[in-house]
Length: 89
Ligand SMILES: [Zn+2]
Ligand SMILES: [Zn+2]
Ligand SMILES: [Zn+2]
Image 1 (cartoon, protein in one colour):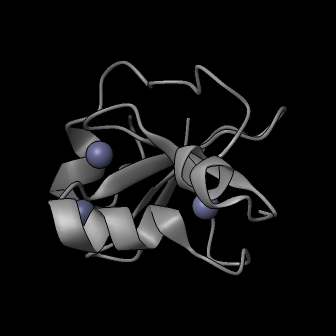
Image 2 (tube, rainbow, N blue to C red; image 1 turned 180 degrees about the vertical axis):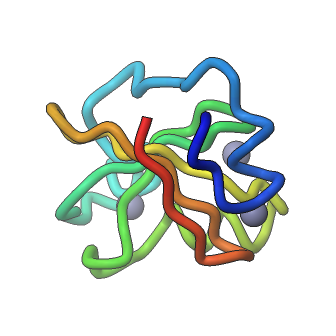
């Protein structure tokens, strides 16, 4: 991660990818999502802030897991919630 802008992003060495192409929480409540993000701490794949339920940012706040990667095909970037920092890889 050469252009890392915070320590959390700098700590990611192997980017975790989505195991399933769905938000684990939206599926349970039969909700819709827009984009998917994968937590780099525990591998949970959840929905983005453009989605009605914003499960990825809720997860980051509640669990203290700071960094997500985009789970969208062709997108190669990481985002740190507490620092609002962004890095491509
Ligand atoms: Zn950070
Ligand atoms: Zn969701
Ligand atoms: Zn997590």
